[in-house]
Image (cartoon, rainbow, N blue to C red; front, side, top):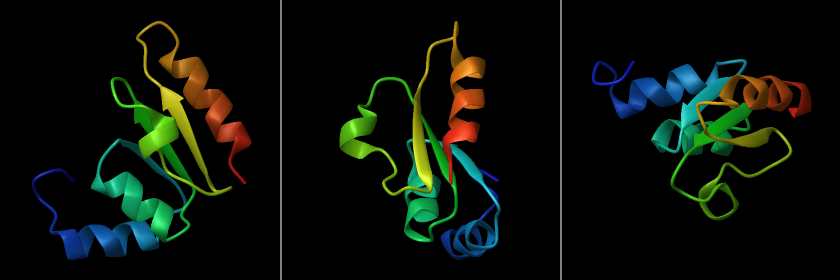
Length: 79
């Protein structure tokens, strides 16, 4: 969707989504605002400071070695 979707279109898509998996970006924050289950993927930024918030959200710290395992565990923990 990057570069092909307006902010208004993105909000509509996320509002109707079952799940958002996103890097630390506007999409992640919009998803958390709409209480769409959200997994935020982080590398350099601190998810404790800038992560998605709420029981419907979870954060994953990115490292090539364990990204898949972290995503799998995050999916299990989202309400």
